[in-house]
Image 1 (cartoon, rainbow, N blue to C red):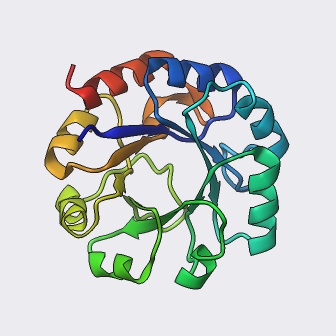
Image 2 (image 1 turned 90 degrees about the vertical axis):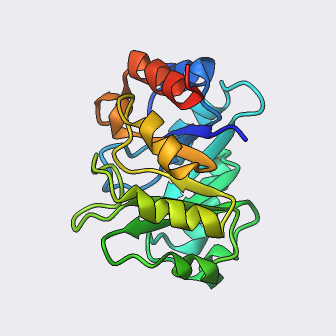
Length: 205
């Protein structure tokens, strides 16, 4: 099975269109005001309307009020919710769309905690004391490999870039990879050459 590719932190239509043209399967829009890659649902909707069909649009939230997250998802037109905070299983179950639950992986992470969540996908990102994602740091991929033995839809994130993503895919065999800061010029501004190189690396080209 091929490894799918998500480019997260989209803030510009030209980056969204380039990512899709270069082979991305999904795009992530971060609806977290504290993030340097924050985009409003209305601006995200303007980009999403320009996308071709069969591209997954993912809305990223962190400990957001449930009704606000639902309203933002509808306003933007995203079709997947990615929950990057401390959301409990019952919160995740309250979405009318597929949910990706994010887990911050540190040295003491136990993949069995994922079993509590009945969601469409499980994203593993690097634990950081100050931020939720976008740290640019990797974690021990052997932990992700163990998680893949337990679930078929594990998404690997955390410090992935064109130089290391092929190694990550071969070590973990994830359902998908999620790239953000590793394919940027600056927060929220994507480097199209890096996206192209990362997609080629994932495909083993």
